[in-house]
Amino acid sequence: MANSNGYTAEIMRVYRGTCIHSTQHTAVEILEDALLGVDVKGKIAFIEKDSELDGLSEKFGFSPSEITQLAQHEFFMPGMVDTHIHASQYSYAGTALDMPLMQWLCTYTFPVESRFKDLEFAQRVYTKVVKRTLRNGTTTACYHATIHTDATLLLGQIANDLGQRALVGKVCMDRNNPAKYYKETCQESQEETCRFIAELLDKKYPLVKPVVTPRFAPTCTGALLGQLGAIAKNNNLHIQSHISENAEEIKLVKDLFPESKSYTDVYHKHNLLTDKTVMAHGCHLTDEELTLFRETGTSLSHCPNSNISLCSGVLNVRNVLNHKVKLGLGTDVAGGYSASILDALRRALDSSKILTIQDPGHETLTFEEAFRIATLGGSQALSLDDQTGNFEVGKDFDALRVNVTAPGGPIDLIQSDGPKVALNLFNHIYSQMNKSDDRNIVEVFVAGRKVVPFTEPKPE
Ligand code: GUN
Ligand code: FE
Image 1 (cartoon, rainbow, N blue to C red):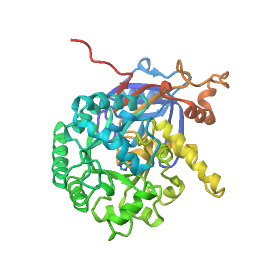
Image 2: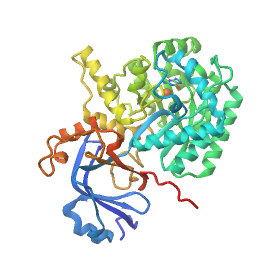
Image 3: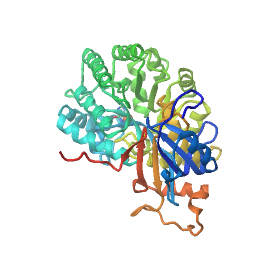
Image 4: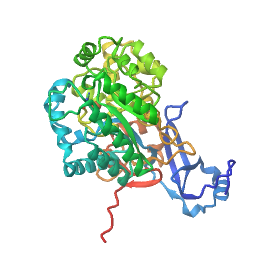
């Protein structure tokens, strides 16, 4: 059946149940008894009230008997977006959180990352991190890998094979790293970045893209930053890095780039701030720097678990939102010890409450706002909001089927006597999100394909 564009949406699946998502205007919209149709390309063909069933089944040519009904305590929400995660650091996540950033990098991170020249080790770690994040409901991830091109290409292949939407970055760093065994020259970094981009694009993975990845200003010469800015510009690519995470780092950048007005200005001067750039942390950015973020369309990845675990700082999310800077959540594994955006969501709320404790005049982040930042906000931060982030018609069906009463899960329903109590009350959904863990996420879809539970390849 043709719609107004003359496009024929052949329907693959239709669901009936509660759908919860964010829109530009409403932080949390709850659609009860919704009908959601997914077409054969994995896109959302319609999302309408159940009362529209007759018209929809005629228009799209499906039979009501084919509808998949969500159970009483289930709902769909958009897949979550991890806007900043180090795939390689998953190998030591949950350990080594006893030092501030710069010492932590030299003591733990660089030695571990240097191991990824071993492709067998890379394959093991990268398979685990993609599977784990998918199970945790991360349908889109923006990954830092390591300086090794071939291992980073492998990460792209693994994300593609397991069905995760991903931006994948080969890390670039050509100075100031005491770990001599884990450093490139400026020329190697530039050439290998070009090789990485060409080979990844050559694979034509539908959901995996390269992202230009200067690690951060302290480990990159101005020459390298400039070359990476040019590569991103010439190929219209995404860019990711770190900024203004802790005080010692900021001081170092001031010493290394005395001609720049600010940390943000260092990246700006090298053409690294674009509407496809995401910068992690930004805990200590000034209002002037945030204004430059907004003017250039650069977004921030808020990584509250990491910021507290490494004692880096507390991002004032309210101030970022007031500056209209695009904002997503990041786990920043392994600075953050959890590979779950649900954890990041809770910690973003905790961090905001800490600011309110310190200043009762501070306007605390609401749960609804945090939910939006974890989903739609993340997709905007990665400039992927034309494809994912909520349940708008035409976007890919990236979704989590959440079962509040999943076996073995952590939720004891108390007010569950009425037939729909668990799904009717927003407060209840709030508490479900606060208490739920990956056991409550019973199915995960990316571009309409069910990627969790995993289906292992059939033996020959
Ligand atoms: N800044 C530069 N590299 C890193 C990293 O690996 N983790 C964190 N948290 N900050 C960084
Ligand atoms: Fe990081």
